[in-house]
Amino acid sequence: MPSISAPECNVCGGTGWRPSAESGAKGPLEPCECRERARIDRMIESAGIPTKYQVCDFNNFLCDWEGARNDSLYAAVKFANRYLDEYPTAARGLLFLGPPGAGKTHLMVALIRKLCEKGHDALFLDYQELLRQIQNSYNPAAHTREYELLRPVLSSAVVAIDDLGNNRISDWVEDTVTYIVNHRYNENLPTLFTANLSEERMDGPAGHRVTQPTFEERLGPRVASRLREMCRFVEMRAGDYRRFKSGAR
Ligand SMILES: [Zn+2]
Image (cartoon, rainbow, N blue to C red):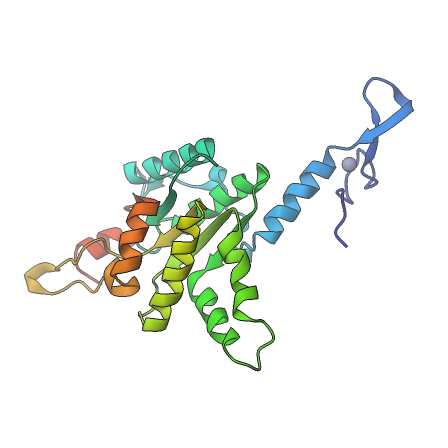
């Protein structure tokens, strides 16, 4: 049973009640502020942010890259903040696009933390892990049914899917992702994504194809086109970007 207050609170000693500022110790008690902090902590906990990203917030997101100001990272933070201001009226979700190390997941986690603080229920999902769990649920021996597993993915106010399209497409993956994405789109529920995919096929130097898969290749044309309708694409040109641009990967 989760606590309604912070057990270590030195205002109320973990009781959740404190003397009121006006009437002092002899007057009636009122709810302690730590209840609100405890509520936010529970929401953040139930968002399922992986341990390694739990420290990520806007304050420790760095917009400078290799000692220089990186305009794409500043712009990404601006879009994330605008999204927060406009939520829940923002019609579209956000898709953070860029190579590993650009800070996509950090920024997405920072955003869902803020949404949790504002009282919205958000859910962080790793794309590969989500597909693995859905696939396992087809196994009659598994205890969770597919629908039970999908329910929070389909109905949470905000869903954040990390590393979209990071494995090869199959008909099954295409159908599953189409279902999730279409459902959330039709219900006007925004979805946030990070992806390391290319918007178009890119050719490396001297005719060598850069092995950067496109949205179409990894997710199929239906999902690719729906994503462009339902999300603003925010490109983050940092991390391995330079290496990628030079065709070295
Ligand atoms: Zn307290």
